[in-house]
Length: 153
Image (cartoon, rainbow, N blue to C red; front, side):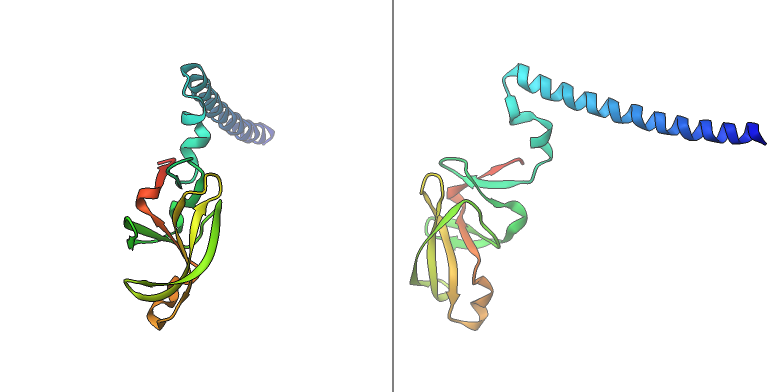
């Protein structure tokens, strides 16, 4: 009976050792990729952290992160200069003064939003919608497609 318990314990220990060997193999691969990126001159552009990071939208001028892809509500909006996206959240932006504007869907109170780093106007924030069917836009952000670029895709 003691021999069987010893074999079971050894089998369990062997499984742990195999798992650790798998972990170290993966870790060593990640280090090799980072080393390759550094030696090749690609730097953090191809590092493992960048590969698995969130998909972002950035200011087209300075590459400041302004929103996450996961925060897109709709891609079917019209901006001043063409297509625009409606986002639930924004970051690294400055909200300007509120003003009433007559847009395609009616009267809204909006405020221009600018990149916090380079001050480029990227779109606007809906502060108030006067029509009941447009209330879902309040507090949301419009980014003009021509003013943002993708990162980590």
